[in-house]
View 1 (cartoon, rainbow, N blue to C red):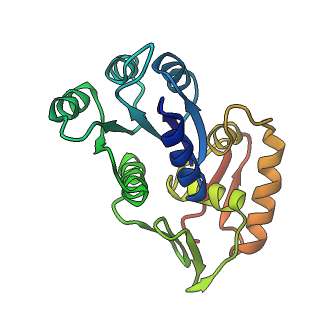
View 2: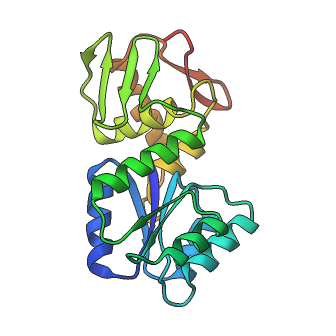
Length: 220
């Protein structure tokens, strides 16, 4: 999963980035509203963490511009403690959730997981297709109850596919969501990771849809 972090406080931004990356997210970041808005409008993300008190362009304006441009990515806004008017303004501008500072990283991660599931019409934190199960809370993957050891790239790839059950996902889409903007993106790398993942999962779990991309098999 790929997240956009827009926060002007360098210490908090570094802490949030470390927590997100430890949880398996690929993270792009910005320290002002103008750059953050540009990233959100031109790149594909699974979720955004947006501070409202930003320089150059405030968070509410960033959010309003995204929603007016039909950018539907789930957004968690960060507000000052006891600033109820910021919360109201953020929700009215199109935010999906909010957290008041200070907060625990675990709560932010839980809210992001819930928003990403909701965006794909999924209710449970346990994603399952046949014998294959992925627990979005623990990052644990099992087949018939037996743990499967995956690398971080393999896990992100599988997680992205399992959040889109029955959908064909192109190599380009996978590349956009598995790598940060400044990473040397090569769609051929996706094929390598798919190959490695297939060797660890039941046969025919991941289908290749010729000329289109990949899909998790319904019977898996």
